Image 1 (cartoon, rainbow, N blue to C red):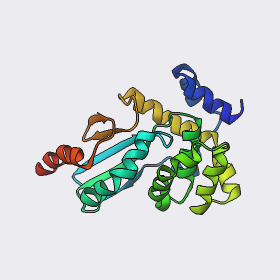
Image 2 (tube, rainbow, N blue to C red):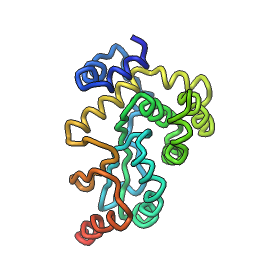
Image 3 (cartoon, helix red, strand yellow):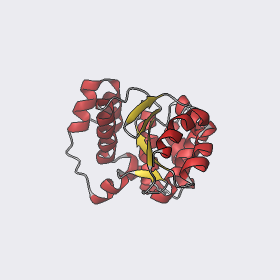
Length: 206
C-alpha cells in the first residue's frame, strides 16, 4: 500500500493504526533513529521538565506556540529552570507529513521550523497542495528536493512517529496540546500565568 494511504488508514482508527505502526518491513536505520531522537530546548540539568504533545495541524497548538511559548521560553527555559521536550502526536496525514519534514531538517533548526509551521499553519495546512507548502518551509530550513522526497517516502520514519503517538495515547494523552509536567498530565493550552501556577511551586522545591 502506498505510504500516504497507509498514513490515512493509520490515523482513521486505532485498529488500522496499530497494524500500520507495527507492520514494518522498513528497517530503522541509524539515520532514521537520529531523526526520531528526542527534540528539546533548555538545559538537560533543569530541575523541571515539560513535555508537549502536539499536532502541527492543531489550531490550539498553534495558539500556544504563537501566544504563550515565547514567554514561557524566556521566563523558564532560557533561565535554566525548565527543559522543554517536543513530542509529535499527529491528528491527520497532513500533520504527520509536516512532523516528518521537521524531523528531517538539521536538528539545530528543529525548534525554529516548528515555530514557522505554527505561525503559518493557516497557509500550508489549508492549501490545495499542503505537501508543496510544507516543502517550501523545509527548503527554507535547508532541506533540498531529494532530501525532502526521501524524507516523506520513509516508512520507517512515519511508523516511528506513529508508534510514539500510540505510546503516548496508551499513557493517557487524548488530545492536543497536552503537557506533561513532572509526570502529571495537563490537557489543553494554558496561559503563561497558568503555567507559572504549576511551575513555580515545583521550582520552589528544588
